[in-house]
Image (tube, rainbow over all chains, first blue to last red; front, top):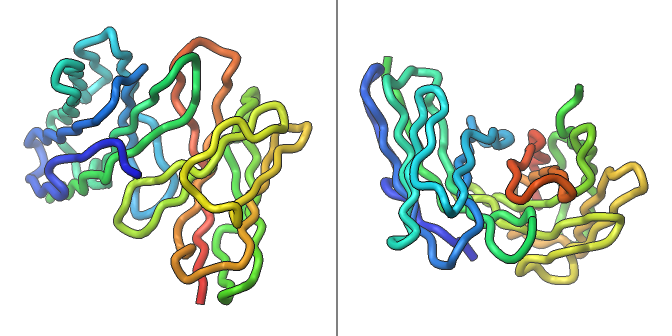
Length: 113
Length: 115
């Protein structure tokens, strides 16, 4: 079963605009991770935020985490055509370093040149 | 440094057949997880292998089984294939022994089509 729900399911923007994707989850977590997938290929890790962190940045990516609302958002600033892909949030829960990820349904992002 | 590799890239089988998919983890990683991704869906956790044993399992039937070898590579076996087993099968590796909370490195996947 899926842990999270992502919103929106699909997003289409112009190059240079910002893209925001949201993820909600159901259970308490150790960390939340965002991944990108191009055209049904392997997933690429983007960023990991731990349950005791509220915000994290990596290049043009900004992730926030609100554990009280069980939600996270991924912001991609100054988007490029190459950012066109599917984006998934994934949560890791349980004691210790489980390495088991529960993924959301994903957001499909299209960036038009 | 090679990343996670998977073979084959594509596979076509018929219902009732058996299939074996292979995965080599990233260098230095000791844990392999397998995921099934149906078209248009997020990946779903099948199981995880560490120290040659199945450590965790998702909600998949016993038709799905696996193995991990001493060199940390892994196989996923699916018996009595069903049409619904058609999916992209992803392998991911990480190191359980390092600090808590790690990114997973994913392979390119094996596209399985069951006719």
